[in-house]
Image (cartoon, rainbow, N blue to C red):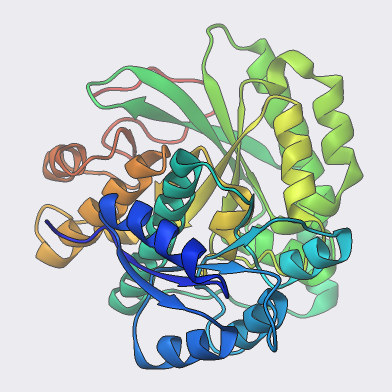
Length: 382
């Protein structure tokens, strides 16, 4: 049997190591053990691991000190804390150092296996993302002088309107629509130019508020029961009006899927997990957009724990003709399914792309093949 992944266990209690090793080995993992943080760092230097599970209370180098040393070498490797007690101070330090999960001893066997499996799958997804980044090219935008940009942005905001593109299940059943901003301002001729101008001018909150107001108004006026995908910039998470708007529209909030792109980092947002929990408290689901095209790290995936991911169109375009893209899409879809995450294949334009994406495990699809972005909620074509 192929290994489910390489796991490193760190604990100064040899009996505990033996017990956990038996459990994880029977579950299909290859397990290495270390009786101290120092020995664990040596193993990490010389070998490859998909996840680490470490005790906190250890002599010479405790779990937090070990984690800090590990993070100086690898920012992405998922780490589980296994501990009998956990103080608030230790918990805060662990969160700052990117801990994936804390498990209190004695850890129930099913919980241990489930947690290690998720950690390995998330790390595996990160490796696939790095492969995608090396295989695909990214494009950056342009600039303008500030005075001209300010006038153009105000005109763009005044003329802003929303287009809606269908997202469907394999087979053709409607799942929802993505709300896509459009502007009639010729100086900012495409959505990326409007977003770039808002970011340069410090006007992201106004742009986000306008997009959400127009999208919710259209949703509440439309017949039917479908999900509406709305894009958020990470900075929108700092905007209190986002949460007030959701509170004012409780029925519509339960139909929203809020997309955060992988092309922007969440590092500047404090309390991301708490803010995402607030969004879910209003009934919203969370999606990661542009998977495979953004930052290669795992922090956004771990912090957001999305219900839905959207594979970037650069991966999906010509997937029926590219063995490399087929392999990447198949692997990423498989890992996402193991994590219980729905996968949307974006940018589908041909029958070949449609059929191969479905064959490779993408349960949802979006692209010109099914419907272009238009001002109303058009019926999609499979």
